[in-house]
Amino acid sequence: MFHRYVAIGDSTTEGMDDPDGAGGYRGWADRFAAHVARAQPGHPLEYANLAVRGRTTARIRAEQLQPAVDLAPDLATVVAGMNDILRTSFDVAAVAGDLLAMQQALIARGATVLTFTLPDPVPVMPIAKPLRGRVVALNTAIRKACADSGAILLDLGAHPVASDPRLWSDDRLHANSAGHERIGAALAHAVGLPGTDDTWTLPLPAAPVRRRHEVLRAELAWSRRHLLPWAGRHLLGRSSGDDRSPKRPVPLPVEVTGP
Image (cartoon, rainbow, N blue to C red; front, side, top):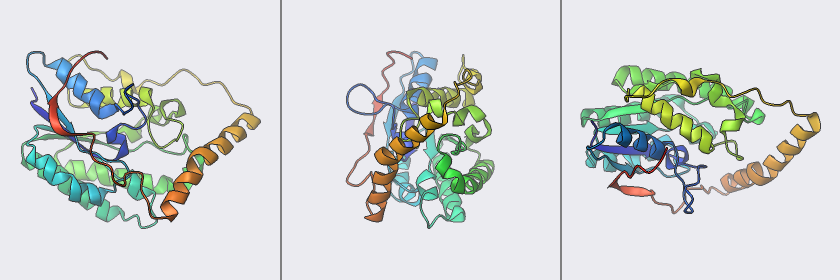
């Protein structure tokens, strides 16, 4: 039985792009919290989400770790690294050290800690092929950190379905609602909740083959809507998380209303 779940991280932990129907985002952390709450009827679960989009691993450690520890969770998720991969200054050793330190600090406080590796980005975003080596290096570091700290590892990167474009949003950086749902179910299975299984690993039905002109049109549209604005923002030294606060900084009871 868990009493308090705290999630720290960046935009994926915040829940982009899984609309909650009220102008915000739900996401895998919210969905995982609901899985936990459903698995322990009669034992209320409190849940806080300190994640802020655009945060690097170092900033997550500097800004979110101590508040998370102060909340005394007995369940926590630590997911970070994608924003580091996208920067020219990517230092996998530094990221690995920050990830390990965060896992160890929360485990020392008595929390069960979970994290996951990153899926191969190339099937979702072909332009990301130069970043594949960084993803592999980060995943290796995440696996080692978990082995050293005792954190529970969900090895998403080892399952091809995690890179199915149909589980990703239009921006190709975040899961869509179906993707967030799978991650939430996968975490529930990883922590051993009753009634869970590994059906999240099953592939989707075969996708229809797209014609070359359809692929080209989709690539141009994505570049215009997402790639160019992202590049412009980073050239100006701006982040999507500037002036943003966590969506759920205070632990609140999880209301289980549906799947």
